Length: 94
Image 1: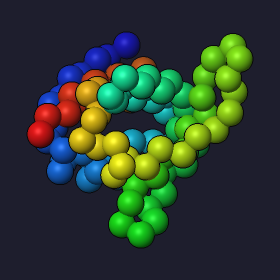
Image 2 (image 1 turned 135 degrees about the horizontal axis):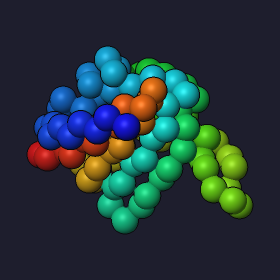
Image 3 (image 1 turned 90 degrees about the vertical axis):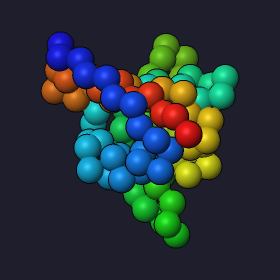
């Protein structure tokens, strides 16, 4: 697997998601004290907000959740996006 690491500023994250994130990709978001692993089902834009719908992965959890990136952007520590044997690790700084 090919792995790349990038550091982005908070204001660069949403345009980056719009351009590079793909449906069906594996996504792991670490923010505050929360870790969310899953598969991207949809990326939508509503009222100037970016919402990623994720199918959670796990033995007991197999549900979907909507994550409003605008609401958590200040607390995001790291995002891992894996698609077609390419892993992208994003570190977010203010």
